[in-house]
Image 1 (cartoon, rainbow, N blue to C red):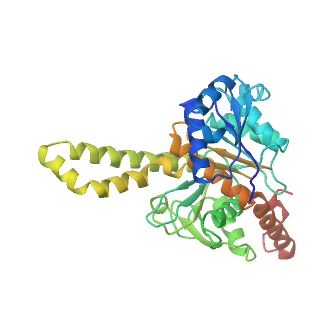
Image 2 (cartoon, rainbow, N blue to C red; image 1 turned 180 degrees about the horizontal axis):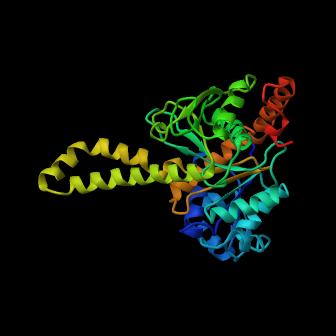
Length: 356
């Protein structure tokens, strides 16, 4: 199967061209059907490609030496959308020359540019940032929104659930996703009015290919008991950073414990296989690739600090979403929800759920 090209913002992220090109090259070694539009400084990209001869025939370079900085305000970045590597990568998706774009640059700027250029899908009020997080089970959990929308009403949460479930069916190969809303308790009386209304709407949505299981508390996100966790961007971003911080804390604590004495160092050598497995599981590079769901196009955000393997994982996520037509899946579920809303006749589910 021939995939559409993937536009890569080669200038974004903490490590820039070298790591972005290396990551794309690593992804191509794993899947030789990938083709790329590398957007950035042509001379630097060509130099980086010297280490990856197999990438040359699969890549086209679009020269651009203007970069969105990591601390740049989205409003300022928007004014330079036509001159920056990030903006031109998104434009390639808009004009159809590429099927998706990957960037490790400024998240706020990437969202603002993507939303302006691609617009939201019919039936979606706001795009949401979704990411894969590790669990105790073999599968990852999808969590959204992770910071794109700080204030969300019931309608937004229902739309996020529909989008997250569609993404989960791709990641988990068709398995019906277990969906829950993040809350301060699992009892039906807990949470805000918007949370309770969203929960009721999802319980009533019998036609959707998901299993809505009510609420989940933050300490259960990584237990493997749920496939999709839905929340507003404010709570989601806090939860995500708490999870990432806890992972770093555990890693640093183990490192300190194993280097505290000669006896501890011997213990480390004995337990090294287990600690290496733990390190691999907690490494964010192995779960890299946040997706802006709800846009008329696929945009994937890589961690700014990602290494080549992390970038390769983000590219692999992008390709999977293209292969399985994520936007078509979301559209189909929105249509189901709309038809069910029209047939509900007073159940509390109406067209406003879909932003019409």
